Image 1 (tube, rainbow, N blue to C red):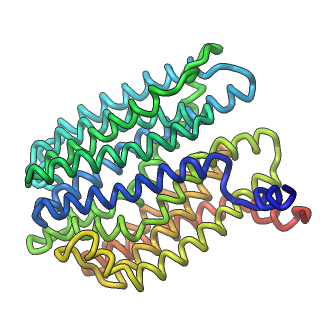
Image 2: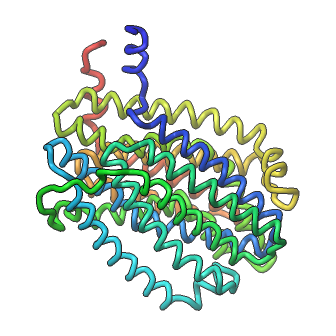
Image 3: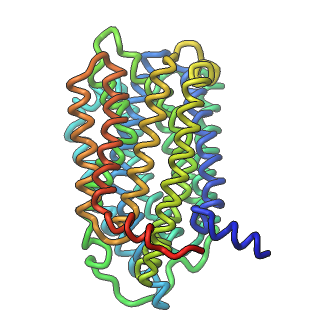
Length: 427
């Protein structure tokens, strides 16, 4: 028992991460399944239109709604620590989320022409799927924040895993029916999200416990900064495919689909890392509120060591096995070099390190620092993209250097992290 406790104390993963990790692992496997099925069912050109939809949705929707999840989880966790119910703050965040959703839908409709022609390949059904996808992610992130803040990590993991399973089932049904246009596959993706939210949240009770009145200030004091940081973060993680689609020449119209598949394959570590960040913020916030600074810093530094080891394995695996696995999973029409896949894995490692450091600043309420770090990464990304050719290399290098720049800025903004760690007593 003593040995087990010692091992648990040295474990960099916060409590609840393993349960969520199982859901994320299933979601990751299902992501490959979904894209593999869609890639075989669609032509390379139509798949690239679907890739544009996929990337745009995953930049905008989490970029806008993930901060609501984070703030909701933090606020509920803080209320529970005080013995106060989280129901009022959940209802407050729902109102804010719906307001954001209305703005996004109106903006998307206003920009229908350019979005449809430049990113979605002229497929109007993909535009419908995009609008529905924004609605789905609004509901999903609010649901996830409610579950996380209440420490319902079992249901959180079920939501993540069920989403992937539903998507694969719906996608497979389309492929069996020989559907060869990208729009229905976009609808299948979104339908999986709606179904998963219902599955996970409907099984829970007591999520809306009565409590004191909640004002906007409880969840919006730093929301502007979090939104900027979140959009920049999601762009760095998912926006490469959008950039490839926009910069592709007429002879490179298939490149976005190939890049998306390579990016998904090389970003395998991200599915494991997301399990950590889902449970990390409430724990770090609690440690900071108790002034447990040594444990706060230990947790974050161990997490960075975990990222370094995970990234090294991923880069080596991408270089050695990546091209073969890519062709096996997605088909012979999608191929990338060892260099391409190793660079994508390196970018994943840099971005995970930056995200871990950003979580430390968020827990300290240093939101402006998070914004500065990720905006620096975006600026460096575009500087590299404009300076380097050809198409895929410029985006890959942009992600690597941009991720390193973001991590460097976020690390510099936390000098006490390193000093306190050196002075911490041995255990």
